[in-house]
Length: 277
Ligand code: AP5
Image 1 (cartoon, rainbow, N blue to C red):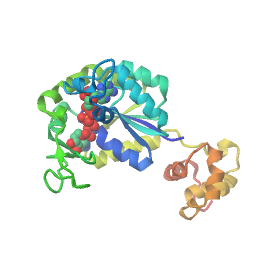
Image 2: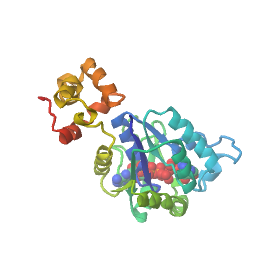
Image 3: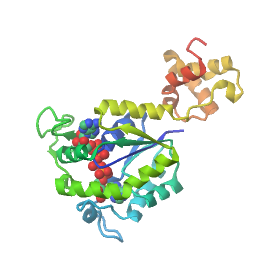
């Protein structure tokens, strides 16, 4: 089964920065309501256009956003969800349409958030994120990745960013508190450098108990399971053997070989099976 990851955090906490990297690492969809709404700012809905809410830093009405998320999750075989849910009613809706494997909260102080938001610059071509102070491009105003122009988002002015932080405190903080009380959320220090934040999130994801059961628990003798397919999981030269993959995948209820390969260190630790078994 592919991972379903939820990243929570205030505006500017680093959700977009980290979600993109996680989606790349695990081959997941990056489902982001902010980007989806920005791409459809002038879409007419029963509640007006998203633009009028976004430019004021307010939440776009739930029915509009719920619809976007439902459609995106239905199409995704595993995802990193960023920017949703932003209030308790969206959290209830999400609970009705999917279940989550990992919920991580990027914790950042408000004064840092405001500096991040007002200093953020986004490539108009490829959407890559920069920061004038914390993550500057090699050449000022030019995207390192594609050479596109770097622009400030309309809602990153000090006035609108301050309003967004107020909306977060009132609406989204209760969602974070709720998940924390349920014991399903992990707090991450979002003020660490981006690479450290990423490693911390990966640790949480990989500690999630979605791994296949150990061979002894699925009623297969350990050495036979190793011979059948776990060797494909554990030894690099066997990883490309499709027969090995084909045997172990249905056995463990896993869908893709990358699901298996990424389990190697944790699996070895749990079962003691090594490439030589
Ligand atoms: P959205 O686009 O989702 O904005 P947001 O949640 O406010 O989050 P941001 O994109 O501002 O921040 P981020 O956490 O992704 O941080 P980033 O990685 O960019 O939503 C925009 C609007 O759409 C909302 O206001 C609302 O109107 C509407 N909307 C969206 N979802 C909705 C929903 N569910 N319901 C209703 N309305 C909705 O990082 C920020 C900056 O910091 C960057 O410059 C980055 O380079 C830098 N940075 C990141 N990490 C670090 C680090 N570790 N150290 C130093 N700098 C860092």
